[in-house]
Amino acid sequence: MIETKKLTKRFGDITAVDRINARIQDANVFGLIGTNGAGKSTFLRLLCGILKPEEGCVLVDGSPVYENEDLKRNIFYISDDQHYLAGSTPEDMVHFCSAFYPDFDRERAFRLFSAFGLDRGRKITTFSKGMKKQLSVILGLCSRTRYLLCDETFDGLDPVMRQAVKSLFAEDIADRGLTPVIASHNLRELEDICDHVGLLHRGGVLLSRDLQDMKLGIHKIQCVPSSQDAFPETADADPLSAARVLFPSLEPVLAEKHGSILLLTVRGSEEEIRRVLSDSDLLFYEMVPLTLEEIFISETEVNGYDVKKLIL
Image (cartoon, rainbow, N blue to C red):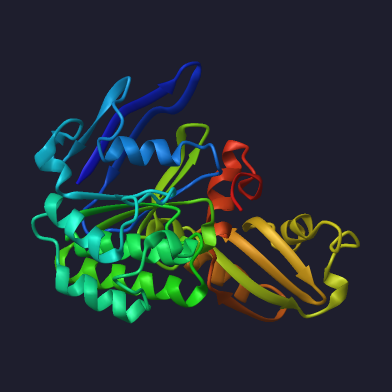
């Protein structure tokens, strides 16, 4: 487990990470979301011991990570800025990583190079941005570390490669208990892979919750009133107010109107929401899957934040 206690990092007058308390459980995918400049990269560099905090500490399996060589062998950091040895090839990087990670799986690395279409003897400087990201992911997975810290890992990958990388993560989580920490500015990239999500804003954690727990208290409904006359006159301009008029005993936090269809995001228990909808004058209703963005909107609005302005 990775744990931070009042973790703080400053660069001159700028506080990049501000007294963060966080716990990252083993064999879970932790998604760290925030805009550019929110402190994601600094936070990851603190986690892997590259940077020294001004205050607080990072504990990996109960021990401080900074200047702890043994602990760092359990961590592989994939930076957003792709840097490789000058003039090196993927095969050269396999030999380089093997010197630091004694359990590095060379056979798997070469097998994945072939599967991803990466020439093991080609100069990395001739690779595209996406190819370099693929290479870094392969090196990280084949290092067989317990923790894999990824900074904007999916940026630059096409949709097929994104799914391939996510499948590899899932395989290593199941097979050997890998714990990926994935930082991104894009909610949609993480909603199908994360177990726990943290929202970083201005150097601090605005929200950190288990994704399943978040989903239990928020639901999305699609419904059609039995008559269009049921809608207030202002429904098209202000569907949220219309939803509150139609369902005064519910707690809608987001609403959209498309013709006669009303899409609602509502807080509360599924049982209570279904009871209210069943007793309402509707042609039909159904529960539909929530997106991660909708969950965050519901969780952050009480703090006065508009998640659409914070996250792409």
